[in-house]
Image (cartoon, rainbow, N blue to C red; front, side, top):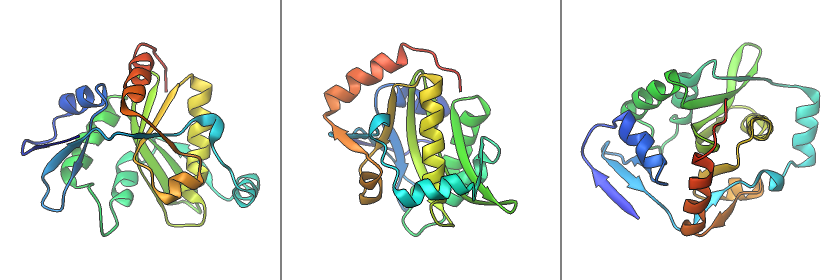
Length: 195
């Protein structure tokens, strides 16, 4: 399902859309498209795949993992690729959501520099992952592992990744039918988790 709108990206509309299983992306002209894919990609936390090399990276503590210390910078780094939907309108809107406790970042730092991270939106007991980036080996994967551990500790029951990619599949992301996603989303929205 895809809907197109020329309107600015309003934060209230964005939150309402997420609560219905719909999310926005911008095209190369800056036009906002709204998506509700079927099937929907999710990460079942018990299925998170951590390779031997990634475990070694985590064990060595190569990166310092932080949360919510450089949200806008994480977004901008995620948008530093040739094919991206993250434009200034998105950065403005999601930074606003972050300032109001609805969007969060997980960051990998090394020698005082941001070298990897991810961000997403949290509603109820659902986390909707938006994007991730890595400027150093395994940096974004370390962030994902830290995110999953955090979400489990806080009681989150749904981790939405929207679409599958070859990279996400190697980490354990799978797909479920949209009707199943909507059922699980509504269950998650009934719960209240603190970040």
